[in-house]
Image (cartoon, rainbow, N blue to C red; front, side, top):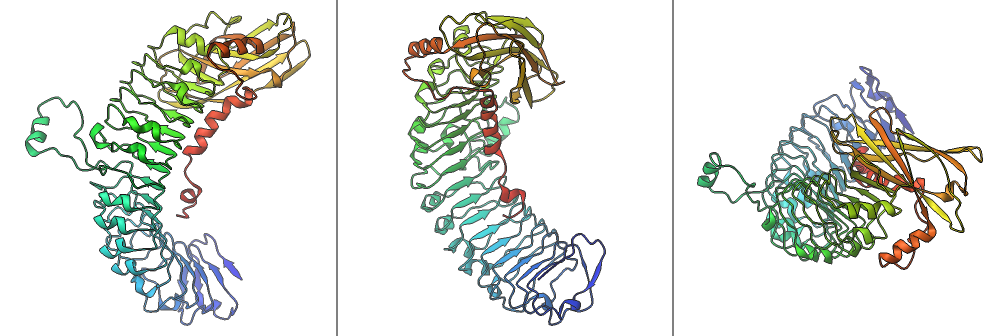
Length: 565
């Protein structure tokens, strides 16, 4: 039986009214104030949820011997002194209790499995008994802004699998004993004051997910050098010693997030390529000029993010199984590696790299479906034309003219044309190119919709909306998408009209259509050294596939959104 009084503001309840409910197991009393005593309350209760618990302490009468879960998020608790042993308690959630300064004595909660104290802003002390909980697997101290350290006993735990410390702004040390957390699989310590990760981290053989974003680490600058930096132009940030010299041994690590860590070339472990299970690597907003050469050895890596590395000049050879490369706003980047060697790459986001000159192999890649090169003003016209001819689902380039190779051109957002006689050729689809300008002051994602009308056959169809990232608003740019004929079955001499809708934040100045025949594509692939097609080809549905994938992978986990962790 469950009684749920949700958001009953200022309601007072005499909790003794529940004492006669002998079979009550689950009770939820969110934002309810106590009235009356609570002696001998709810002996058989197994789950107590009381969000906004009004008292500064928990009366003994609420500690039922059969309790398995206590959820008192957003409470007014200042302390939790439990005089009873809660042998069956496995779940304790006191998150967002802003007045709580100390944890309970965990020796009276011997079988606790999950402890959640997220956003307990006044928490300064964790009881040393936490290290002796043999069943504890999850600990969440995220956004406990006053917490500086954990007791030494904590780091001896053999059971803890998940540890969240992100947002603990004063937490400044991971001890050498970190390597003793033999069951640890997830460690998130973003935006903490951690100065250095101990070399013993490589002993964590089960670690799968490591995130240290925003940890600036310690610097090697001496006082004189810091003093001189006040008077001399600063060429680069002081190098950090955040990371250990080697990652060798972290064989199960799948996700490594090190964005905004002020990492220089020397701060990156040279054996970064020795992580055999790594699938996701994020290194946004750092200070290195190059990456370790062994990057290509990461055979399971599918996603690499290098956004906003303004000192980065070159990128080494990419792993062959890479799917997504982000290198937005790398303003010093001059050359990409041979893209064709990454035989499974589909999404390439390198917008606002004004010094980028070379992108070898890009015109030979048979897997890429989406390219964003807005703001890459130095790339050659030869490379641009090669990309315009291919069946790339989404292509964003600087420019204000429809390329000459496009068969049909018009001013504005619409175009009406009559298809030629095919003369035995099979129409695979159409490349649609538009010249746009935006009225945006900052980077945003906007949608482009294309409507096709076949006046000969009398039907109109909409393509799906395409999500486009706009980095700058001061330049015209070209967007190209591919429309597959599978969806429209256009025949020779059909009269066709296309209308492009970019909403009220973008203006379509020009548009053009380039007809792609199966025979022409085969010749183009032969010229590129390719001997087969890459599947079913692109369609209007494919236009949004790449962006949808990126949104899904960057989405926060359900656990964080629902405050489960």
